[in-house]
Length: 214
Image (tube, rainbow, N blue to C red; front, side, top):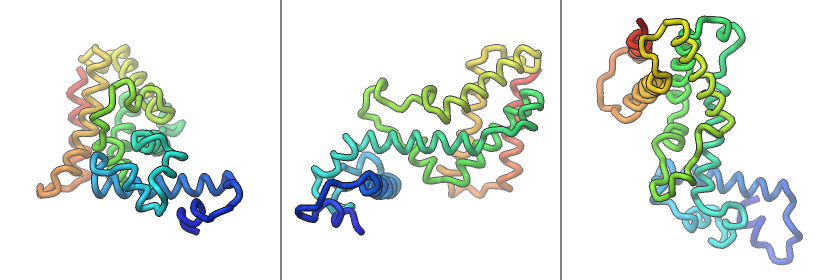
């Protein structure tokens, strides 16, 4: 059953929750493809509705605007990133610098395995929105846990005397720059004849952590 069949039949009874969720899922899948293939700023609610097969006004029953759809993607990606990176008890028992190494490797691995998520979660921003309306990575359930663990491990490294950089914010953001610099380069510079990817990743992460150490 298509979206248009569900929404357009005259005299049809109220939609069930399952049918409403089916329509939301269809809208989300269509919007994901349009955002990735045509760009967020080039995609309108009207275009999403047209591809879904119903009148433009219908889409507003499910999403207020395309920013709300994009925020759904960000929250979903945030949780998926944490699910991929969450360390096991064995990893958590290691020194904090090894937990940081784990987070860095798993983060790069996640983005390498999910390039569409990178495009939606990192490369796509709603530049017209006020900053207070933008997705808050600190309040998201997924990235909130990730950032909390990252900062906790950085502080523990500082407290143990492992890091010569004693500003927690600076140290944590250097690590973040390294993570997204690594994958962002692979993503944004496909024309470069990269050496072995695993060796490059290992070397970049090792050198980032070594640069923070005493």
